[in-house]
Amino acid sequence: MPRPERVLDTTGGKVERFAAQLRELRERAGRPGYRELARRAHYSVTTLSVAAAGRKLPS
Image (cartoon, rainbow, N blue to C red; front, side, top):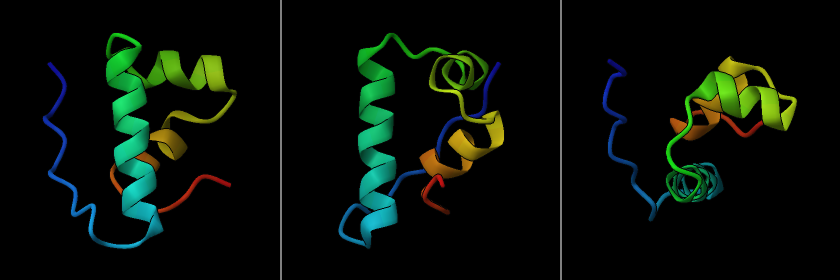
């Protein structure tokens, strides 16, 4: 079972706002796992996970 995602401070910077938007899009898509997202988006699982956690923008 996946760990719950931490609450984001969306009043913070652009990284946190991006993370919130990424989470919202993931929710709308039916909450696919990060492996599936990585496959679809051609990004690594780690890159997407870090972005959704609000730690770093994907590059």
